[in-house]
Image (cartoon, rainbow, N blue to C red; front, side, top):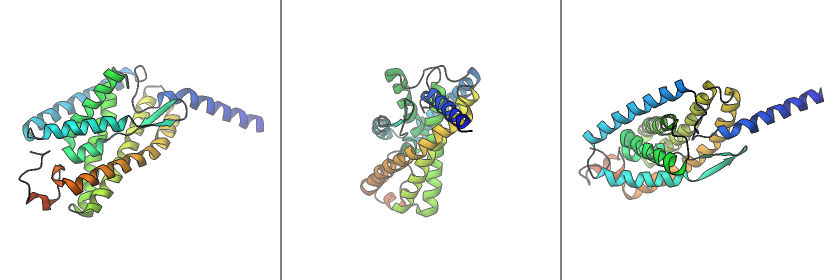
Length: 250
């Protein structure tokens, strides 16, 4: 019995350490099958095209500098990597932060630009699976994170700092965990890693990484709330008297 248990443990450990290099949010080339690549690429291109139209129609030119600053901050935040056993790592996303400041449309464009630069310039994520990486981390993280943040913040109190803190913390943590679960599902569908192994490794570690995402998002947004609340896509109503229009919205 001990021999069988030891053998099973060694087999499970070997499987985990063999497959865990695949388990990163930035999926590399060669780990997704063609149908998964095609579906995520079409979805990403469609949403990006819609976001471009929305931004061009609704946003003022004053929003462009804020988009640039937000992109730089997200890019820098994603350079903070958390090591995961097996030779891979996890990192922050920043989708909820971008959505809170810029809205889901401009925020998704910022995230898309960040992922393209990372893939082309730093080989962080494959080119053939760029659509999947953008879909998982940019679109799901930004749209899902923003609307969850908005729902919680408005429920707790739109004009209260507590509403911002609770909404941003819950939404940013959830966006990281959901993105990791979707990436694990795509790897499993493609036959790269068994679903049980992928979900266990990805979700377990990104539950912890999501805490770091929540802390950084809350600190950054709270600082902006206290100094320039008008920069938010949905600013507290008390700022509408002092400012004609929010910078990041039409």
